[in-house]
Image (cartoon, rainbow, N blue to C red; front, side, top):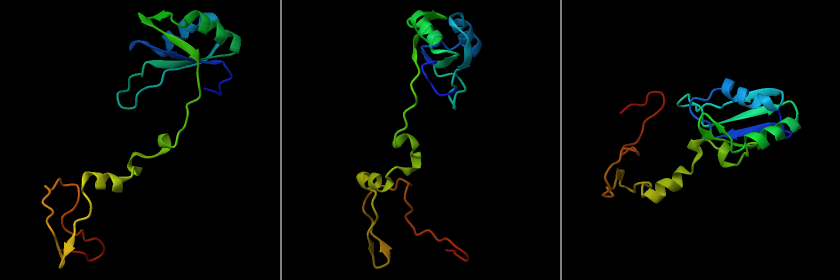
Length: 144
């Protein structure tokens, strides 16, 4: 889809069986449709219940909103309005592994164990398998 200058519509409330051809057929009476897109869920491969319809001109898009908002398609009531650009926030670009793991571990009480005379003091907590209890040896020639 190209940049939106009030020609691209968001269409929400799509029934599971709706495909691009159905959406195009429902919206073509209001003007020349340039593009139709129904995003798919990456995990399931099914659409997520909404799609986008782009018109050649803004007047046709307005006509489609007027006629199709709260209209019905495949037994479901549609929500149709001007599509808004996806907002990007700091957290939406942050990888899931970039969470503040140290503070999470501290909150859980999984901080560093205290060493005494080269040995680790048992803190009485059950080993949950998340932190190694013995030093990890890495590198060339490292062995136990």
